[in-house]
Length: 136
Image 1 (cartoon, rainbow, N blue to C red):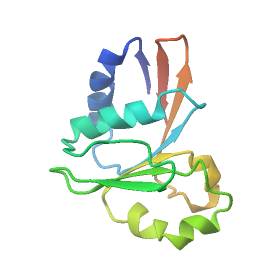
Image 2: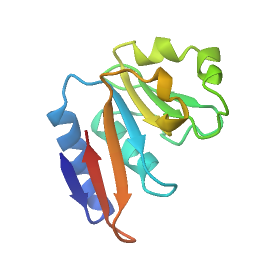
Image 3: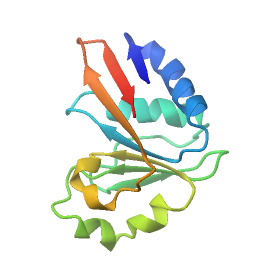
Image 4: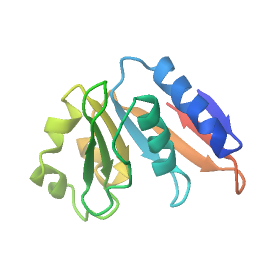
């Protein structure tokens, strides 16, 4: 599935389409270059999921938990970890296999720990205001 986004106002539609297309999936892996819009798209997904908290990249904390009417939502950013063992230290399995939504930025840092059934989302920059979102 490919979703073309030409302006920020289209992210809400893209988020709704993603969640509607994959209603049973809970772990989503976000790939893309720095500045591609991974965090921005996750914010849109959180809005659709009725998160009341402020959402931001958990670059330094590694994981943020948001409250929503759909239950807790976990947002990960593994950019700063050096080794996969660091993910064991905070109990990544408890999050990934909880049945709650998990949005994971920089999953390439923990390739051996990712659930096999996780959905892969690649975000490609096509222009300064446009993105191609590829869901696998």
